[in-house]
Length: 467
Ligand SMILES: *Cc1c(COP(=O)(O)O)cnc(C)c1O
Image (cartoon, rainbow, N blue to C red):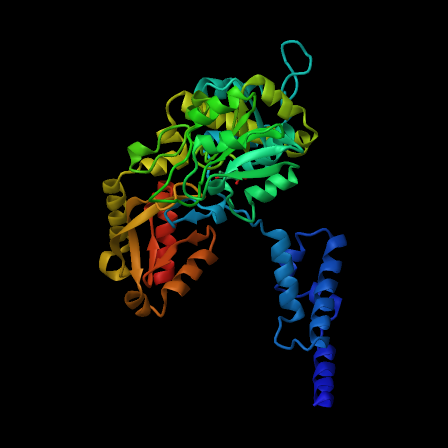
C-alpha cells in the first residue's frame, strides 16, 4: 500500500508544471499581465510549492497548480468589498457591513480621504484646531450634549470610557445587563480588561435603583447602564430608569455611564417598532456620558460616539487609549454629513436606514408585484408573499416590519433544475452579488432592503439564472 502511494506521489510530482509553463498559461496570462513581474513569478512558484506540499501530505483531490495560481491571483486582484444587493430584508445586516450610508455621506468620506483636510487646523487662526469641533456642534444641536469624542466603534467607546473614568475601582451594573453584545464582546470581560471591578446588583429580571444605592461604597467609581440591544426579557421585570440612576450618581458625585447601543436620533415607535432609547433622552435624563454606535440606527459610518458634559469628555479624551482608538478624518467627514441630514430634517428620505424603516407595507407589496410582473408572472414561477423584515444589527430584537417578498418555491425552481439553495448560490456568485433569504424551502427577495436603482440589475440577474 505504502509503495502504491509512493508511486502515485511520484507520478503526481512529475506532473507538476514548471514555473515557466504556468507563467505562459493562457488562463493565467491576463491576470499575470496586471502584476509587476517581480510579483508574478513568486505567486506562480508558491502555487506549485503548495501543490507539491499537498501531494506529499496525501491530499490527492486538491486543486492542481494552475487552479491554485488562479485562485491566488483572483484573491489578490479582485476587490472583495464590492457593493452587493441586500435582498434579505435585514436592514442593519452585520455580515453585510451594517448601515449603508447616504450618497452625501459617501461623497464626503471619499473627498476627505483623497485630499488634505483641516483635520486639526484652525483655518481662521492658522493654529491647531480641535478634531471634534464640527461633530460637537452638530451633536449639541441634535441631542443637547455639550461635548463629544468619536472613536472607532462603540466597543472601543466602552473600553475607553471605563478605562478613563473607573480604572482600578468598582463599577456597579445590573445583573440583567452583564451581557454579550456579539462577537465575544462581553461586558464583564470588557470591564476586567479596562481595569475596573464589576459589582453586580439586583437580579437577572428585576433591578431597582435601591439595589445600586446599597452597593455604593468608597471604592465605587461609576454606575453603568447597558442597553440589552440584542435580546429581550419579558414578563416579571423591572429596571431602574436613567433619571433615577442619574439622581443617585449625582448625590454620590459619581458618573453614570449609559451605553445605549444603537444611537437612535429619533423615535422608532411611529414606525410600528418598539421603543429604542434615543441619545437626546439619555442626555436629558442626566447620564454623565452616553455611548452609541455610528452605524446602527444613526445610519452613518462605523464609529463609536461618546457624548456628555465637557469635563468627563475631556478626561476620556486625555486617556492614552483615546489616541489608539480615535476615528479618522474620512469617518468624521462622513459622520458630519449624516448628522446634517437630521439637522435639515431630511433623514427619512436621505439616510438609507431610516428610508428603509419608513417604507410602508403597501409600497413594498407594489414593488414586489412590479418585480414579478417585469420578470414574467407565469414564466418566472415567482409569487409575492407576506414576510417580516427586521432592523437587525443587534437592535430591536423580536421586532419586525411587515413586508412583501418575491418568492421562488422549491417546486417552481425544480422545473429549471434549481433548488432554493442553488438559486441563492447563483445569485451570490455574480457581480453585484445578490443575497437573499431562504425560509420554508423558498428563496425570498425582500424589496425593503433593495435600493430601487438596483432593481433593473436584480431583474436581469434573475432572468439569466431562471433561463
Ligand atoms: C452594538 C453595541 C455595542 C458595540 O458597538 P459596535 O459599534 O459594534 O462596536 C456596544 N454596546 C451595545 C449596547 C450595543 O448594542
